[in-house]
Image 1 (cartoon, rainbow, N blue to C red):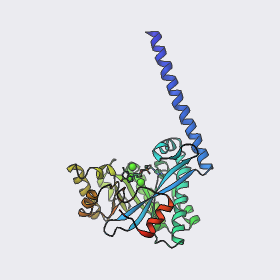
Image 2: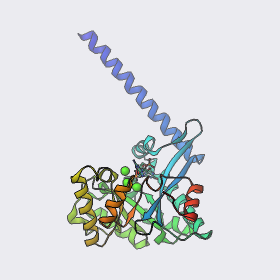
Image 3: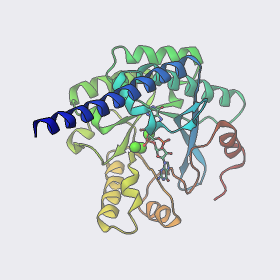
Length: 278
Ligand code: C2E
Ligand code: CA
Ligand code: CA
Ligand code: CA
C-alpha cells in the first residue's frame, strides 16, 4: 500500500509540474504578446432599443497569436489576472480604445462612448485616476466618451469602491456595473455608488422567455434602475422575443448577437456608417 501511495504521489506531482510549466509558458507568451503588439480590440455595438441606433461600443480584447490564430479572452485573461500582467494589458486596452474612439470622431463618425473592462487589479491600483487621466490627455479623447465597466465583486469593499468611483467620476468618465445580478449585490449600497449604468448579465437574459423567475428578475432590475436614475443595458440578447420583452419592460439599451457579435474595426465602421441590419 505504501508503494502504491508513493506512485500516486509521483503521478500527482508530475501533473502539477506540467500544469505549472504550461502556465509559465503562457505567461511568457503573454509578455511577448505585449511587446510584439499581438493584442487587438474587437467591438460590439450597444443599441438604443427605441431607435435601433448604435449608441456605444464595448471594446473586447483578442490575442492574435502567431500560431494559434485569434485567441479568446477566457483563454488568457484569468492567467493575466493571477500573474498581474492584466495591469499592463489593461493599460494597452484602455489606450487603444481611447485612441480608436478619438480617431472615429476625427473621421466624422457621430461621437459615442467606448466601454472598457477594468479588472479587479486595475481598479484597486494606486493612482488609477492619474493613469486614466494620462491616457485621456495623450489620446485627446473627451472623458464623456469613455465608459469603464467594473463588476459587482469589485464593490465588495464598499468604502474603497465609493472612494475609487468618486475619483473616476471627477475625471468625467462614465462607470457601469458589468454582469449585474451575478455577484454580491448590495441593493442598499447601490444608490450610494456614483455609477451611471447597470449591465444586466446575459445569464438572466438568456432564459427570460423560459424561466419566469429570470423574467421577474430582469423586469425588477430594469424598474429599479429607473427609480435610481441609472441607465440600463441588457447583455446577451440573441432573439427577437428577448428584445420584445426588454422593450416592453422599458430597457434602454441592448447588446448581443441578435444585433452583432464583437467585430473588428472595419466591420464596426461599416455598421456605424450604414446601421445594423438584422
Ligand atoms: P464581458 O465583459 O461580460 O463581455 C461580454 C462577453 O459576452 C463577450 O465575450 C461577448 O462576445 C459575449 N457576448 C456578447 N453578446 C452575446 C450574446 O448574445 N450571446 C452570448 N452567448 N455571448 C455574447 P468575450 O469577448 O469572449 O469576452 C469574455 C470576457 O472576457 C468579458 O466578459 C470580460 O470579462 C473579459 N474581457 C474581454 N476583454 C477584456 C479586457 O480588455 N479587459 C478585461 N479585464 N477583461 C476583458
Ligand atoms: Ca463587459
Ligand atoms: Ca458582461
Ligand atoms: Ca461576463
